Length: 447
Image (cartoon, rainbow, N blue to C red; front, side):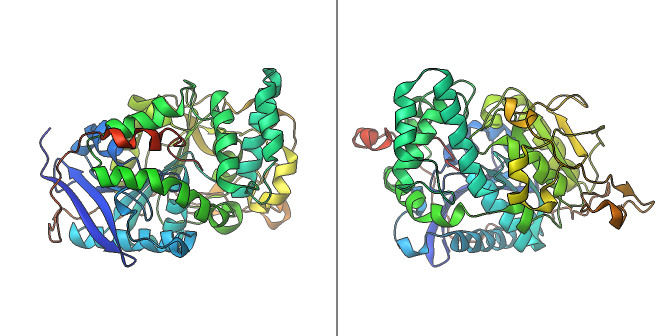
């Protein structure tokens, strides 16, 4: 594949040099900005190389966020916090729209990147044409509690006394954090991954994360060193601020289409929380697509279906067309103890969703947790003749989860500006001295 644009740039964002890779077959294609997980786990390599087939219809931008990879150097620990990362992301969006002469771009988030992307879309909607999130974060405190409970329950069922002892030692997280933030999280994530909560193939951190990074020619030697040093630093300093999100209370109305591509078996960012949040969202268009054979990474586990639907959704937005309407299905109800803490807007409501590759069918959730409870079903929403959502009667006591079938997305312009400092992209081989530094890397996207 030949690219009209294929540039690695080091640009100043928030007063710090940060690295991005821009790649696309045609400069006229819409821009798709990927926000990686972690915090601190850059997967620039997989986005611009493993998913390079998307470059025929998108100009993809992969960004090493502040404090990791090519953006590790010169970052003070005091700046590793949620607000600074949101500000960095907004500044990057403005830079890309100006540099590539686009009115708007698409945001694509994975794991922690869905938290960053959701705040970005909610607070800075002017230059964003649409959002897609996978491994969707909903409520940071509940996320960690449910993930811990899953690991403990599975370890007990398997008679894994060593794992049970480890989980008892680190303790259940309090306010989204373990007593020792990094060590506790890594211990829990390893057990959760062992029992399929992160990936259905139950691979290891070495085979799934560290080895691909070491072999990558996308990252220079200093980039790899920045990854090895940065992921622990980012998680340690950022987690206390990133774990406090509560989107059902904070972010339910969006000015752009909002799509969630979620693995049905995800217990890293538990899928049990996603349906109720989706139902509370108000956006020009929205969709929740379940991937039945995936956990935290449907892009990796069901790549063909994922990328086909990604193209379908975002290209429809770029053309200013609404996506096909799906059959309305009644979602399962959440475990009741979750609801009061998520807020009234999080109560389950009917909404448009589907299982990947199907138009209708039962939604699969994560086992007994979702069958235990009973919650109040909110009132159905009716559409006006103008296509705008109308609220149910006040007597029903529920909040709106309606959506307009019309798309309110501007089509990105077709001209491109290549101004700016461009760093030549010279692939770098793996350096053996980094091998041991990567052995303890967490999975891509710890959140």
